[in-house]
Image 1 (cartoon, rainbow, N blue to C red):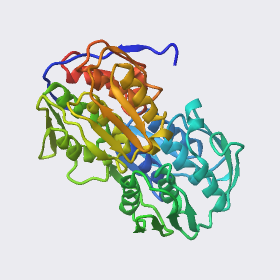
Image 2 (cartoon, rainbow, N blue to C red; image 1 turned 135 degrees about the horizontal axis):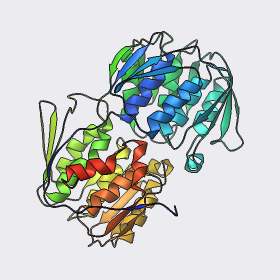
Image 3 (cartoon, helix red, strand yellow; image 1 turned 90 degrees about the vertical axis):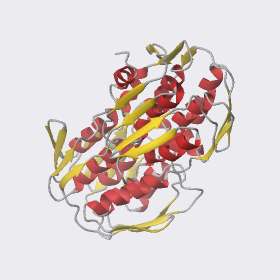
Length: 423
């Protein structure tokens, strides 16, 4: 991490701002995969443009899919999938878990690799599931790098996996399953399954394209073989990326509005409404506008975030500034994200004088006065935004490599300054 540029996180008093969020990364990358597998072209309206989505587009383009930008919208024209191809996953979990099952439908070799940190992320379940479905996978480490030698078709049928490390293992298989000869009946057998709402998001995107995709129960799912429709798909704003801006209202005792908040959604970011209310915020949603107002005090929280682990870094930053202790549980799987987020959050909060400790499946944070210092990001976009949140209240916070936020939110630092009226 040497050589990374430090960003002086701005302090702020009471703010009042309106924020327009870019599109959802989770929805964009799911729709990109389905567009590559569809029978007709798809027009994606306002998809996210970020490192993760650009890596997904490059991956699918390497397999033959055509992409044409039409202003902020993207026309995706499916082609016969073909290899050989080399796929750069970067640090994108959606690329490394969603594209390999699709590569089984390619006749030929498709090799996968990524950033150094990506080689540390769990991939055993994806590799073993492809092997169980009849694909030849060459891997010496059960992680990146590996090569899929596809046969151009997948029989499908019944498959049991252990997805306790990530729900992306489930979603990756379900997204391609309609193109398997027999579809797929997928069962999770193992410890708890994190981020269940992300699986429902996957099922919802499949059903919207005419695929018969159902949850049999809480740990098994069925996708019938069939066509995947194209058409026009509108991408919702990224509700998880709303978190830092909503947190800013609480930290400063101000008010932040987010436009185009959907009335119904499968995004886990919608859970901010309940979580922040429990921490003392005033929440309103009127005509698609979410308004969050801070009261001057942030209450600690005891919360099971097993369904919304990606919100944990933002919540942890608020907990470090709260007036009472907090316990965040159900997030042991965050050790396998862009970095070990539990270890990183504890290290950075304590480095600023705080009192955080790691639990078997979460964090315990007892408020203490914080001081300035460098907030390390570990090449993790959500660690970077957490540092920005703490910097609102604590003088002298420097966030290392703020540009790592480009993974899901390019231009974050400019948006942050604009919200604060400092741009």
